[in-house]
Amino acid sequence: MSGLITARPKRIVGLGGTFRQASSSERIVRAILAQCAALGAETIMFDGPALARLPHFNPEQPDRTRDESALVDAIRTCDGIVIGSPGYHGGYSGLVKNAIDLLEDLRADTRVYFDGRPVGLVVTAAGWQACGTTLSALRDVVHAMRGWPTPVGVTINSVEQRPFAPDGTIGDDGIARAIRAQAQQIMSFATEAVA
Ligand SMILES: Cc1cc2nc3c(=O)[nH]c(=O)nc-3n(C[C@H](O)[C@H](O)[C@H](O)COP(=O)(O)O)c2cc1C
Image 1: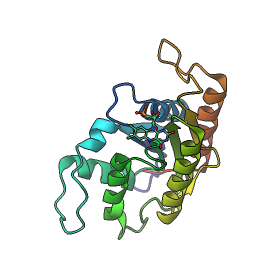
Image 2 (image 1 turned 135 degrees about the vertical axis):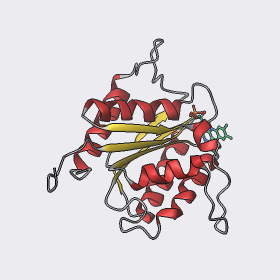
Image 3 (image 1 turned 120 degrees about the vertical axis):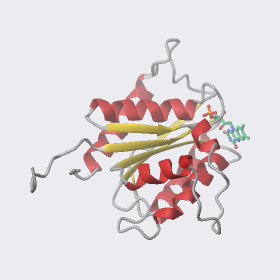
């Protein structure tokens, strides 16, 4: 019916992870998406293998593969984002950086880049130092892209912590609380979406 404004579920996009089969950064992003879904969101995940299918970003090449268009369109139409990266040599991974650089395609949008949207950040690393430096670097990227990093960032030290139970669920109460808190912040900061 014309003139009817229909509320639709909030759309939350996850991106991140590595080539590793049990990538911890991917699994934590998925856990946050699952919490967002429990709060009513529609979610979509671009994991390590999906990010690896993206060609190296070339600013002089305007043609886009189907995988590139899928990521750009998902971010363009989303209400919130979760980005997860391992700490690699004190920073975020090249796989994640290449995906973020592709989002230059959103430069001329009315809602440019991540404008007005909450962005939850996840870092897993073998030490606390890379957890901190990588989270801080990702927050700088989100600011540059006009997004709103959520106050709760989830960092996991994969040497000192055991985030997963044998059945694959989150097995650490503190990590589970941080995941829930970040999902709640994403869902409450995401503006009310309409069709
Ligand atoms: C190439 C490479 C570089 C890494 N650099 C660091 C580092 O600088 N500091 C650190 O604490 N861990 C480092 N790590 C360990 C990873 O951050 C850690 O294993 C992470 O949890 C892997 O994420 P994943 O489970 O999603 O693959 C590195 C691992 C690799 C493969």
